[in-house]
Amino acid sequence: MAMADIIDGNAIAEEIKAEVKAEIAALAARGLVPGVATVLVGEDYGARMYRRQIERTAAEIGLAYRDLTLPAEATLADVLEGARALNQDPAVHGILPLRPLPKGIPEGPVLEAMAPAKDIDCLHPVNAGRLALGQPAVYPATPWACYVLLERYFARKGLDPKAAFEGKELVIVGRSNIVGKPAYFLALERNATTTTVHSFTWRAGTLPAHTRRADILIVAMGKAEFIKTEMVRPGAVVVDVGINMVPVLDAAGNPVLDDRGRPRRRTVGDVAFDEVKEVAAAITPVPGGVGSVTNMLLMRNVVRAAAATAAPATVGGH
Ligand code: NAP
View 1 (tube, helix red, strand yellow):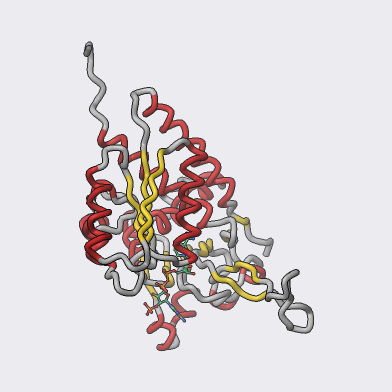
View 2 (tube, helix red, strand yellow):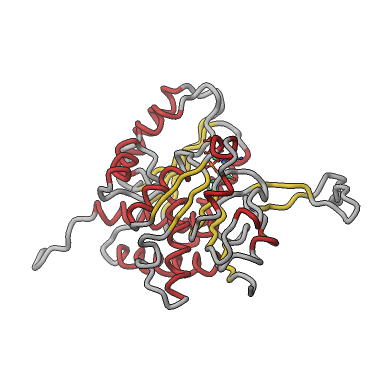
């Protein structure tokens, strides 16, 4: 079989960026600048990197950005007070709490303190509940990115991006609140025949039997290159959400060191890309797949939240 189509997340992210910029320009013409705020508590490396990315993307596309950073010693009351201030701030339309929070700060109360209308990642229970009930809801950026990649890929292949899901076997590996579980509801919304598998499926020994049935396979497990050729149906379309850092090895299997003598690392997904691309019909790469699209969709949600607050255009006004 021919090698899989590589679904280019960077190119699709650029497309979305152009669309979002046009939406921002249309709002600017009405005097509205959408604004996004992040809430960072403490020093977590990943959360800090994510904050910088959001700040940079916001600047690139013309969104206002507000940074709320609290020290690791902050109390839950401090964080809730910060969240409430952002709820009240008319220049902020979208709020993103960055995780993980420091150990002493429970996540639930922080997410629930956000105004649901300013939640841009479907983290508030009201929004997550609406999504589960099939009601209009803000879409969570990462699982939404999986479907945007698929839909734009199907459209490029000349397929109807709606019909391409209907009645298809869609298997999701992972059931986390931020990826796997909402990915399930988004699959049902598209009328796919939907299966979720997780670590107990693996322990029961039936994981490969499930994944091999998939016409569309979405993998969000956080296990480097776990999904191998024999777990994938030939001709399947594979979306790899995983982001894992692994050491770079030389031909003898020893770690390669950088200039400063530290082991070099590279980013890989949850799917063994090099072998699975030989059997799949299409696959998203890591990096350059889901992650590229996720941030741009968060920005799209900020713009939508801002547009929802705008007064409808008046006819014959002052
Ligand atoms: P998570 O909370 O750790 O969830 C992992 C899921 O995988 C769990 O449901 C777990 O099952 C399941 N799992 C683990 N080992 C398994 C096995 N051997 N067989 C079957 N299922 C197994 O991770 P997450 O937050 O969903 O993130 C998943 C990956 O996506 C990570 O690599 C993360 O870095 C990446 N990610 C990427 C983006 C992006 O924008 N691209 C955004 C968020 C996350 P149980 O529930 O039974 O434990």
